[in-house]
Length: 100
Picture 1 (cartoon, rainbow, N blue to C red):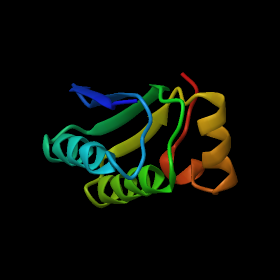
Picture 2 (cartoon, rainbow, N blue to C red; picture 1 turned 135 degrees about the horizontal axis):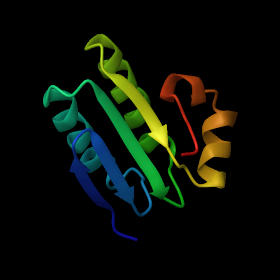
Picture 3 (cartoon, rainbow, N blue to C red; picture 1 turned 30 degrees about the horizontal axis):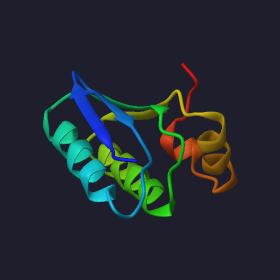
Picture 4 (cartoon, helix red, strand yellow; picture 1 turned 90 degrees about the vertical axis):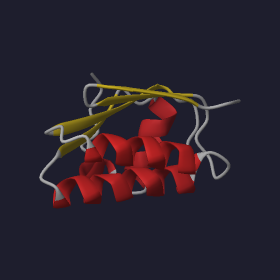
């Protein structure tokens, strides 16, 4: 499944499976939003049925870069299986995961 990313006004919406083959695409989109000067960055994962460790690493890295820039970072609307993996890996708090 291909990855589709749209970014608008501090919200990055992701659709498709995030894995090692396309994690750089997500990293670039998040970095561009962090450089835009917005005070917050939300990553909408409602359309992401699967994310591997590389994709999770991209999210955690973006969260840390956001914190360095005093940008509020959050992951919103993850599908249940993605939310479960984030919880099992212990990164939910770092990513400020919320359902809506």
